[in-house]
Image (tube, rainbow, N blue to C red; front, side, top):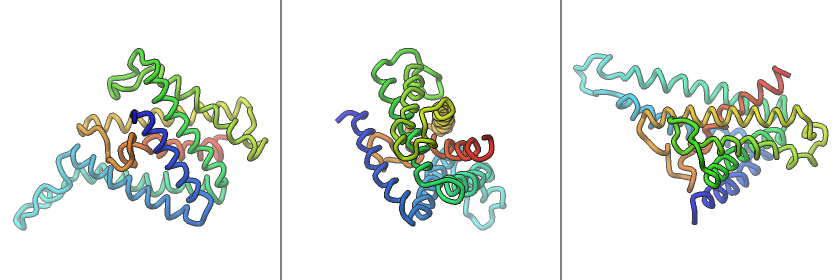
Length: 231
């Protein structure tokens, strides 16, 4: 089985579980599980990036020797971001201000963007996009944008007004795809600095939770801002 096939199968399985959690009272629990797992993967990555969580445990060592300030300077803002900004935006999009369907719509844009970037990039290849992530190509970027705009077509029957085939909706898809790709590059940059390929191995073809959700954790807050503040 090729890596692309693994990614597609994994995405379908993940989408199945997302739908289950999205349309039940388990949504909040599911989000907290994802946040917790991603924070653990961030922790492991930061540990490698700055040389450990703690330096020494000897009783005579000073606080500066025991406490790795660089690690916590990265980890604490990350926990805050994941819980308050990402978690809060997910809650708003899903419940009080949005709807479960719209939240799934945002996730589908991210999934389509990821699949489009990977498949078109592998199929066409060509010039590399950046040194930060050597596997990413300009053709893959175009593929991400191209496939993301199919989301309104898939969701048109849910609400022909909300998911109309309008310029605004296509622009929304392109912007969410852009944020996804930038988020992917940002996490790739940190992984490169930490000298790791994947943040985990739980998902075949994808790696860890953070590898799968690197764009989503930035796209969801952006989607909230775009829908309820910018518009």
